[in-house]
Length: 97
Image (cartoon, rainbow, N blue to C red; front, side, top):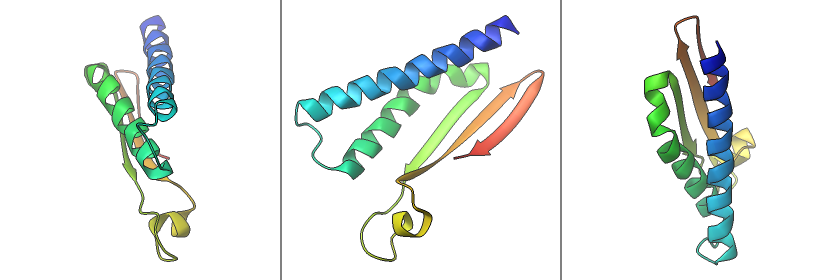
């Protein structure tokens, strides 16, 4: 059980690190618009999380379309959709966010 809490803490640190990387890119003018920022944040999280798939944690995400009144962002009110899959020997869960 203690190992599982460490993994969850590690995942939180990975997400924080991804945010730092993307904010640095934003500050260096490498990112110009919100959809690019969202896309790079999600890609960085997925890349940094690859090593945790073997531990039962998988995060996947997609950026929604954002142009026009019929865009996915207009319809759902979100910039992206994601899924979190936890597959531990004592606990399994899938969640969309």
